[in-house]
Image (cartoon, rainbow, N blue to C red):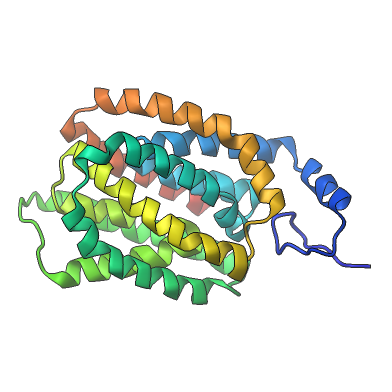
Length: 270
């Protein structure tokens, strides 16, 4: 008899009969699916421009399905949000900043693949907390400097990019670091959202094969859950576009920092 994983979102085993896999899917507690639905809705808000909410997505998904397992389950939903964002905000994209930042972030993702492959669940959770707290401190420090100077040296993009790449692979937590990068560049609201949209679309596509074939955190079961969650992310995308239009440039920057702080506290004490 073939042993199964503790979680239905663990490594996919082709020897398990299809009927058993569907029974495992049916065993998902309603509370877990409710948390995931809220996470998908907030993910839609985040992808439509309310960037700081990404921390809540990760936190709720980790609460519902576990830290490492949730990183794979969330990927198809992230890509759906990315497609919407790049189509809607494409005209505002600043490619010069993406081209400067992207190679470093891709390198960080490769480091994250190696680090996270056999990382225990508890270490994953502690890593998530550390990333959020550090990034929060950096965001607050940068805003308090009240400087209009835009960093030009390659080392700034290099350091932030590598850290963001590692964090996006081990916990989909690059958002706070890319927020720091784009806040430091003083990008206007729409350029901020449009540039970040393409950056994450490219990097999430780059991560996809590693989740499928290396970590094996994307399986037929997780994809079925994603289909169930699709209406929630769609609702968030539609509502988010309307909300972004209502927020001023100054308030937008404060919003990003505030929701990052709240998200850090939630995941720290969960």
